[in-house]
Every structure is written in C-alpha cells, then in structure tokens.
Image (tube, rainbow, N blue to C red; front, side, top):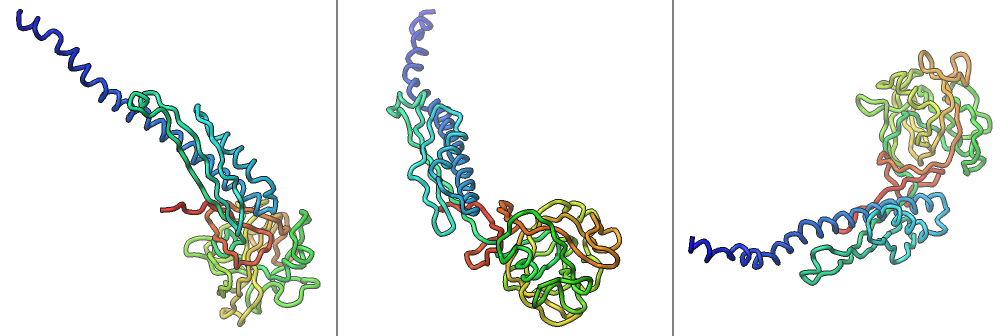
Length: 314
C-alpha cells in the first residue's frame, strides 16, 4: 500500500512529459490532413479555371481570364481558407497557367509555433486545332465540300446540307476531289474490331472500297451518332483507284449529323433517294475536351479546337 501511494503521481508526470509529443502527433494527423484537403480544393479550382479559360480562348473569347480564374477558385473552396489567384493568368501561345494560393490556419500546430501555412496549387491548359485522333465515323470528306458549305471557311449557322459520296450524286460548284476516287465511296478502313478510325494530318489513308459501310460498323454505331457532332478527317488530295485508292488528311472539321443514307439498315431521315449514298448535316464550331484527339499549332483551323490539361512540372 505504501508503494502505491509513492507511485500515485507517476501517471500525471508521464502525461505531462508526453503532452507535447501528443499534440505534435495531433498536428500531424489533423492539421496536415486539413492542409492536404485544402490543397486539393485549390488544385481542383486551378484545373477547372485553366480548362475554362482555354475553352474561352479557343472560342476567341478570353476577355477576362482573371475573373474566370477567381470565380472557379472561389467556387471550389469550401473551407475557412480563402483562395486567391496570383498572378493574373495571361493566355499566350495556345496555353494558360493558373496559380491559386491560400493560408490554412491550424488547430494544434500553434503549440509548436506554426499558426498557419501558405498553400499553392497550379494548373496549365492548352488548346489548338486537332492534329490527329480517333473519329467515331470512318468517313473522309473533301476540303472543297467543307469550303463550299462553310461559305469560304467560316463555320456558322445550322443550315443542314446534303453531302453526296462519290459517284452517287452531284456536288455543285465543288472543284477538285469532291467525294472519293474511282472505286471508293469515302469510307476508311476502321481500327480492328471497331467502327472508329485513327488518323493524323498529312497521313495518307487507305480506303475501304465499295458502296457498303466500313467493316466493323453496325447499325447501332450509326444510331449513336444521330444528332451528334463528330470530328471527321478532311482530305485535300487523292491517289490511285479502287483498292489502291488513298486520301491525304489535311485537317479535321466538326460535322453535326442530321441524316444519312448509306443503304440497307443504314438510313435515317432519308436525305437522299434511290441508291444514292449521302450524309446530311452542317459544319460547326466545336471545342472538344475529350482525350480522343491531339492538337498542334501546325494543324489547320477548320472550326474545331482541342482543349486539355498540360502535365505539371516534375
């Protein structure tokens, strides 16, 4: 009993000695976790702002990138810290960088002399004309078709027009290659097992000869494209005939599909009659955020733009 009375204060002394390490562990477990959460919010705001500014710039409408960046930074912060954009983003050469910063106040770390910590996050996004990628429709259209239907190169409005594939109908006022080459109908060889085709600018593409839809495609693939906008390769040169025919990709344009007639089960809205093969729609402006296409400053601008986040510094 005497020994227990002598050791009665040992626990208190031990707790007193460990209180600082215990608070330090609390700071690590709670304050650092709160810092991580805050940085994630700042990063989300920077990513969203960079993509939004890049989209605006791709549409030639990036008039106030600072306001856009601050709007997204604030909208993505739900803690007590305030997100600040500094410096003001300045889009240039097809890319923009957004940097967010904030001060995170701590709950336990002040015992160790750390009242708050500055946190930063940054993101960069770029934009440009598509230079290559995977199209959901294995069809190539001629540059002169695009030129004529856009009134000389400016996609505008939503007036649908019928584009006839080679040998199946007229293409008024369209000099040069206006659909395909002899023995071809505009179809391209699809990627194995799909109804897609992967291409790149300046690439010469082999055709899928004959009037039938490209192998690998099903009626369901075309149903999914109804009233949708797709990026299609635009060719400016043809070579050979029949099974040796090839198209050279000049660039990519966005076509909103409002009808097609490719024979058999591949008909919708019947834009042409009889045995004619055609697609109906209109070329339009498009800003694409998917990863299906790459972009390049060297690619011709035909009304479509690709926007993507750029990798950060290592």
